Image: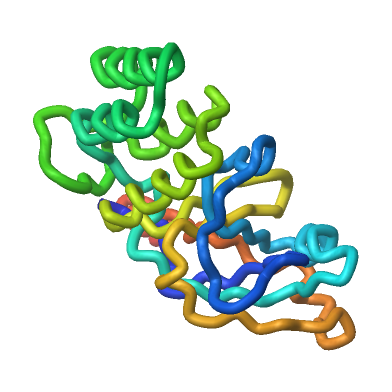
Length: 213
């Protein structure tokens, strides 16, 4: 498998409610568009916006074992999670979609890390996306989803937002190495947009050979 996870990722986090150690809080309606977790951005201006009103911007360093977009989970396990945590029509809708996506192989599992045991696997972010799209990734269910991913070795997810901006959503606070409060006056202009948290794909031997021709 080719992993895109750097050993250490550095991002910005802005918040007015951070007290004590980092933790996963119950997501409110409309505040979990990328799933449950601690939201960070490589764009300082974005973090500053979320810290307005007496909050603090922190430089967050973390080292995830595995990213959501690099992982595949057993279909049976994903269905079991939905049966346990969702109710009514939405539960049946999400389960049907999970099975449909797996059966039609809509998502390729090539290059994914298989987390757990099972006869059939599905890309891990499909579960998150279905819960988000059905407005069920909130409250206790959101926290349970973060715990579920962590139990499968998945500590964070990264999303491309726009141009050079990326968000990293941390599911596992234990993978956080440091959270350093930073004043705007202390930041060098080069840090306003931190490097992409996505590692470039390694060059193939064929590509390197082509350069030597």
